[in-house]
Length: 217
Image (tube, rainbow, N blue to C red):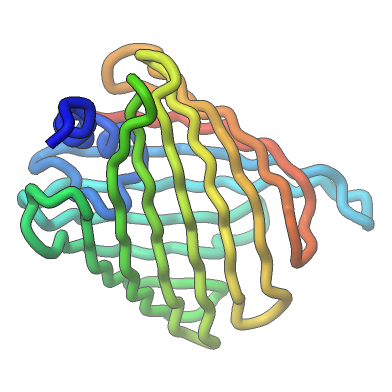
């Protein structure tokens, strides 16, 4: 096995702890919290939309991660899902696979959210990163689908560059495709700050800015 690939595999637990874990299980006993806010440009009616999200994970066992995913704005809560994610297959293999099942509320209706995550680490010269795909279906008042494709790279010892392609087919409304690049900076061990952009590619919506705070302990 090439030495740089071996180093990348050894660093994967650190990368997984820095971001929403995706296909990698949260380390047993570890807690990850993310608070973020998204500010969009004015739409055709002249309204600036602002939304908030809270995301939490807890490593219950070496393979089982428990989590909570909440999103809303000043008027209502659009999503509140509690979920569990189970890591599948041999823990030492490069390709990571996890199954997810969530339940809660989405768009004012009771909902189930099954999902699948696939991830793999890579090396780019002396820098190391990861690729991850999250695929989810939301089964409730209607059926919706979400797909997030994420690539991350450690550009400096304390800075990560992350690019995410977000696609969805909601139960009501237009399908969408968005590009969401961001930088994540480690202020101190266990505390990171995220600054990102939202650029709609199709399906409407407005450009926006994301500001987030991540805590790990």
